[in-house]
Image 1 (cartoon, rainbow, N blue to C red):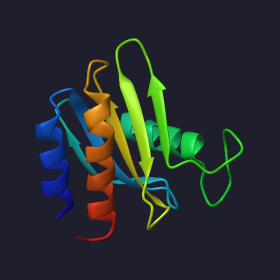
Image 2 (image 1 turned 180 degrees about the horizontal axis):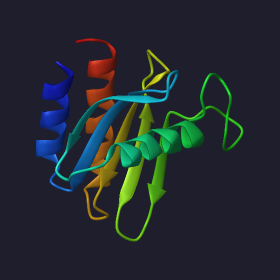
Image 3 (image 1 turned 60 degrees about the vertical axis):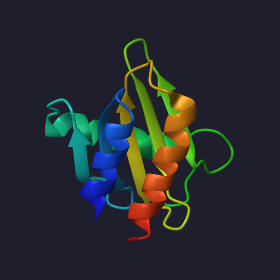
Image 4 (image 1 turned 30 degrees about the vertical axis):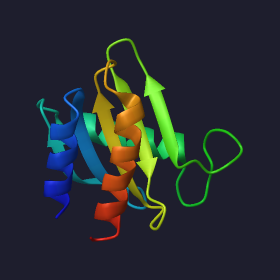
Amino acid sequence: MVVDALDTLQSDFTGCETLAFADLSTQMILVTNSTTTSPRETLDALCAEAALTLGIKGKIAIGSDKSATAIVAGQDQLRVFLRAESEPSDVLCCVCQPDVDISGFLPAARACLEQISGGA
């Protein structure tokens, strides 16, 4: 179940504030899990940023190759966007504190996305 997978990922990484499973083909957030209250506009902006950084419908927005991972670092947060390997429209949008264990978080987030994207 998507909610359970997001719950597990978030509980494993205390620096993870928001997880959002989205469909880039419709640019919609489908399921969220957050330790903070995020208005709908904030989640919509997160999805739009995923579309910009990863590209949509085969169109590359930044760089020369289609990307499966994008990381946007700010002073007070780290935003991570992951595209599913098996279903390129499925993405996981993550908002983390800057001190999150990124080397541990990335593979765990990728596995979570592949699990929920594949329906396992």
